[in-house]
Amino acid sequence: MSLDEPFNDLALSDWVSTAERHCAEGDRLVQMTGTARPDHFEIMISYDKDYSCTHYRTQVPRDKPELPSLSGVFLAAFTYENELKDLFGIEVPGLAVDYGGGFLRTKTKIPFSGDVTVKKEKAKPAAAAGASGAEG
Amino acid sequence: MSNTTIVPFGPQHPVLPEPIHLDLELDDERVVQALPSIGYVHRGLELLAERHDFIEMANVAERICGICSFIHGQGYCQGVEQLMGVEVPPRAVYLRTVWGEISRIQSHLLWLGLSADALGYESLFQHSWRIREMLVDIIEETTGGRVIFGVCKVGGVRKDVDDAVLKAVKGRMREIQTSFNEIASVFREDPTVKKRTVGVGVLTAEDAHALGAVGPVLRGSGVARDTRKLGYAAFGELDWEPVVEQDGDCYARCIVRVREIDQSFDIIAQCLERMPDGEVDVSVKGKRPKGEAMFRLEQPRGEVCYYISADGKKNLARFRVRTPTFANIAPLVHMLKGCELADVPVIVLTIDPCVSCNER
Image (cartoon, rainbow over all chains, first blue to last red; front, side):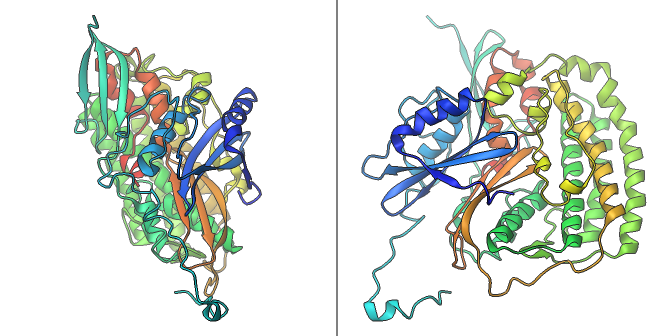
């Protein structure tokens, strides 16, 4: 079903131009989502044409969490971008409909910021590292 | 000086079984702009995947929503099975397809009842839910559950259904379909239903595509896209085509659901006719998912996407669900622009908003 549709790495600078290309080719925006990694936010996006998906992944640095908005290309992006803003705390300049962090009324503000999503692996002592692998 | 008025719609409203809020900016009775806000019942279920065993997580996935519960469980299990390279026995695949289509019918009947209620047809609402109840009884008899089926698991299904029971189900499904056709004609032909829905909340095919609409909202706008065409479960082996209506209005979205109910009865009949023999599960003991992928299925409300990332540990690294209601928010905002205030409830209802799904 989908294992033959890999995620392609994309430079942040190519984020908008890639969306414009897919829009020009008549593709549909399927989804956008993020994952908090220890050193950056990973943002994923999927475009679809004739039931075939193309996925991309870009990195947004934690020290400057800013993702250019695609809502000028695909208006549908505004909901996903507001969600990224509310769950991950990512700024989205150029957002067509900006809720200012109030789209998702979560009890915990920015719940997926990374403090609870992915923790840095603790450095293991050299002797124990070789014997590990039997987690949980 | 602006002469507009802001009217709050929801989070509690008679047509909304679950909370969603819209700020409606009105010029007299006409909607200039609608601004939605969600999150009143956000549960953070995606985060649980990072803490729970991936086998247990199938139970959590099924609890994302009480209406599309089975298909959420099925989507999660299919995704994890693919990452583990597990092949599910054909009988389990067909049973999953049958339960998934029963879910679709009961979801559409639930929606038809709610829409009848919103249009002022109390008896039609009760008849829709009376027929839905017959399906829920079949769900209970074959799975043990009525809302949460609890039969889908990583590796197959938890219980088999005896062939004699399946034969009886086939006969009862024909009776339920006959009962449904008696009320379907009201949705198709009643002048008041048409008066409230024809030409209301129009979404063109171009706008539906550009705004990322999915499910009956998309197909009601003349776009023949149904994720079941990917061929997952048994859909690749069955004879069916997406249901499409051309007008893009509330009536078209209603008729897509009415016709999809008939189609699901037919798909179930095909599955029961071709039901393979054999086991219903395979052991996944000692196996763990590794890798990442995006999996898509067609829920009653439209395409749902599951992103699963796993690194070979007992819990997933990331589990993300893009629900059909979330995808239909942008089209909803577009449809509401320029409509009459009195039409807002009907338009909101025709995207069949599932807030529990949305706030997983």
